[in-house]
Image 1: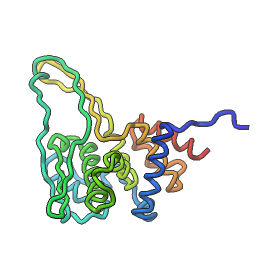
Image 2: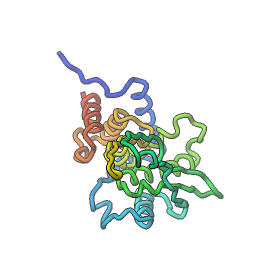
Image 3: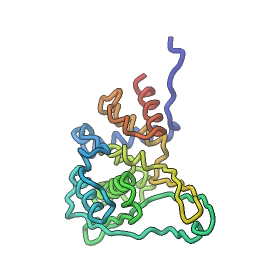
Length: 240
């Protein structure tokens, strides 16, 4: 008799969407891609010193293009200035919050144009997450697999990064808290990057590992505490 069963870390509607989407990814991109490398935040995948320059951003883009089997010639990179106004926080303590995308994607003359905000270049994990998301648009929108009118196209693109082995970065960048000093004042920041919640990233990673036959994936130790807890719970749910 089973006295205790682990519950799924997401609601049933989110669970169904994640499972159907992951199955669709397998059908679209193949089992070989499903079983491909999981990209880790280590020198093996991102060697050399990172200074946050535009050349560094270009290097990250080219590395991720190679990993995702995208011809870099198909992609034009633009740099966007940050849209935040620090004027108020320069005069008083403040709590600031931001949410959504740190990049953009559009099609021009058959090529994908992706824009990356300059402030993302100072945060390597967020930069990789943002570039991975925008390259996901290349595969989904640029290749005509889905339409921009599809209601879930943004969260679907986030989930695609998990399927392509880049979920450590997108999950870790989903929510970040920090403190910044400006003059004599300190203010806290809360940033949400992307369109999935931490439980959804956790269950997406769990479903990804389960489809790969990984009951206890070694790469899970690189996932931040909150999404890792949902990942572990998701795996217990799937394996029971």
